[in-house]
Length: 305
Ligand code: 3HC
View: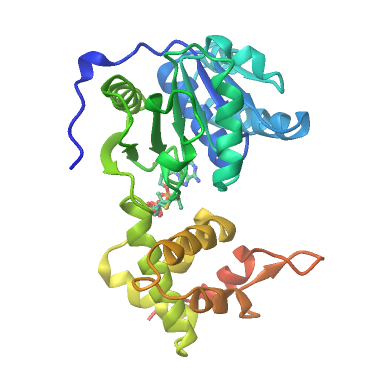
């Protein structure tokens, strides 16, 4: 079993590095500047991606200002804390570096391999992976003991939870730092073992997989969704898939099926959902890109009796 960390061991975090400037990373970048009020560097593969992430953060700060939740000075101070860059050498003095890049072990290993050479030896490294093995992500590090899982939920601003994942190598100092950072972000942290899907996605993959199975068996999407209402969940399974994004949900499902083939439905049930013409959205090349509008249409009337 995993043990509770000793908070006294936490390292003070004065500058945060974020690798990946997609929606998830941009959302938590905003949270880091708002709550920790420390400089945050955000990087990605190219300047266009970085600019998009920074623009999202600036927009969200603008919205908070417009709602009167931040005055002009505070908003400008927050904007000034965010730096987008493609130059990873600037990460040298970051003491907490978190990645949210493509959910592929090799990609994450390469990202950390590069960053490890740049940051100080005691900098804490964190991965926002949603279901991959944290130990495997750190397998190529010279110092895997400072790697933790630090898993946010969507929408980051609202969801109160962070899953902190300990590997057999993770030091108490790294773990403790992660807990103190999570608390500083105003989140409740739970410590989970490094098992596929940790806790939340393990449950969600079941829910989403069963929901897809029900559709496969002939129940309309809208009725599956409606059937969830009385359970008191804030969203039905398809709205939730819509929120986290088709690609992310499918990836989590794939990971769980690979890890536990006897416990999760083979993906055909989930992918059947993606093939439903009224649910799926495809780009011009025919690739599934999501099902926002179609799902909204399919869900129209949910809640009305
Ligand atoms: N970004 C920022 N803030 C948001 C937001 C977003 N995308 N969506 C909603 N909010 C804020 C609103 O601004 C509002 O804040 P306020 O009260 O301060 O004005 C507050 O959340 C409530 O919003 P609404 O009243 O519009 O909507 P609801 O009460 O219906 O709540 C919800 C929306 C919080 C998204 C709720 O439906 C919910 O909790 N859904 C479940 C979400 C969930 O389970 N997420 C986990 C997904 S799994 C995951 O992320 C893991 C990954 O690895 C797959």
